[in-house]
Length: 130
Ligand code: FES
Image 1 (cartoon, rainbow, N blue to C red):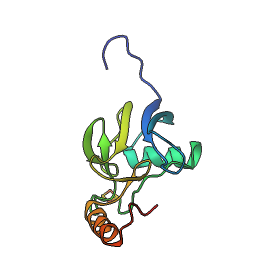
Image 2 (cartoon, rainbow, N blue to C red; image 1 turned 90 degrees about the vertical axis):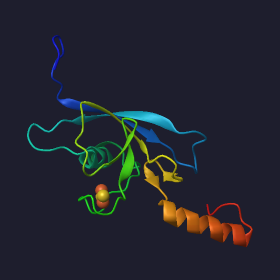
Image 3 (cartoon, helix red, strand yellow; image 1 turned 45 degrees about the vertical axis):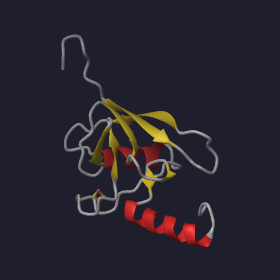
Image 4 (spheres, helix red, strand yellow; image 1 turned 180 degrees about the vertical axis):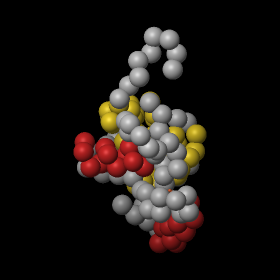
C-alpha cells in the first residue's frame, strides 16, 4: 500500500453483464463485496457473494473449485484465468472468456461444444439455437 492510501474493507468488482434475451450490448456493473479479514478470497467467492447477497440474476460457472475442469475460465483484469484459483485484488474486472460465445454474463459455451453446435446448425440450415 502506498502512502496516503487507506486500506479498504470492501472489494470493488466490475463484472461484464450481458443477457442476450434482453440486452443489446454488454455493460459493466460494479459491486462492493466485503473483503475477508482472514483467509484466501478467490473470485469464485466474490461472485458467490454477489449472487447470494446482491444480484441473483448474475450468471457464472464454478463447479470443481479445484482447477480441474476449466469451466470457470474468464478474463480477469484483462488476462485469462480461473475464477476458482485466482485470489481477488482490491479492485478487479471480470469478463467472460475471450473468443467464446456468451450464454449469459460470465457463462460461455465451451470451445469444443460450440464447434459441434455450429456444425449441427450448419447442417440443419438454422442460424442459432436461441
Ligand atoms: S471450477 Fe473447475 S477449474 Fe474452476
